[in-house]
Image (cartoon, rainbow, N blue to C red; front, side):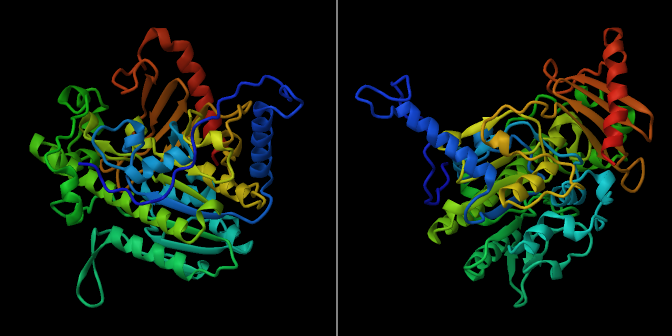
Length: 481
């Protein structure tokens, strides 16, 4: 079934047909090609310089939403028409990843532009980075009206740091003061629209809509609890089973990940251990995603209705990826592709028109968003931030020296049996994994083995490559501190 699409107009994504070959065509008038080039240059300069009225910023931040859970990313099942449309208006990064795949740490990394090793939140605690050096802190100090609605998960919510701050998560259905229940995504939508309605008209604004969905409701037997209206969107749908969701793939994991005491294996048993359970859970997971998509559409439509869309940067991303039963795993945490890769769409109305609908394969990280958005607001990026400004990539420029590797880190949670610590050097080709609690290594050739099914750590042909990767691992690990 096709989802209803809220009315907001996509930016043009087709290049004009150009026939003239020089600055001036016959008759001495400027050629079409030359005028287009001048317009492109003007757009690039305007975006880089941050001139004119400061842009508004809306961050649509999903939870446990992996990179390929979008129609525009090739997913044949999930229905995300509003986010697909957003991708036609902006730039979609197809190789976006997080430096730590767990809710609290990843959110701290986005806000601070720092690795876990520097911001100090290794699970769900408050980060130690001074607030004045964070994305919302700097925007507010520079005149922005700053709001946060939804999930926080970085210690106690600092409501006093926001002009509008409403933090909540953990359950899909929430009790209202009058005893009624409201779905957390519906509450996200109501609070976001209320922020846009009541904001001061004379200030630029930064709004984070931090969804709890499609995160599971841990401890509830149904796990994924969508709203009734989305049921018809997936009536009769059969979700394809991932190729590596089988016992043979599980048997290739390190033994400690196969252990039934491991939390990822426990959650797999709760969600995916029978074909019937897999279908029920995945359909409801996708329904939650489609409900988030609908709320994103409502926010985008409201921006347009208020005449704000032509000066508002919109970002859609997630805090981490998610296992859909691959390798017999559920949730995230570990440095495998399903867990660390996230969607990233950035729509900046100041971009040159031909960039609408573009994709970038550059390695983009969650720590890049803070410096990118500060640069867009023409605010100095603190030297304490470790991410890189994505602006040149948004403009379609080739950036000499752009990263081709990064350090992944995840601390132990509770115990080595529950969630063991993990680290990795992720490069554009090879991935080296290190499990410090067990002193176990893995090595994968990503282009040749994108599903990470063949551990090459004992392959004699990889001895030289492994030596180099171990050396680089030490370097990037130190740089993350």
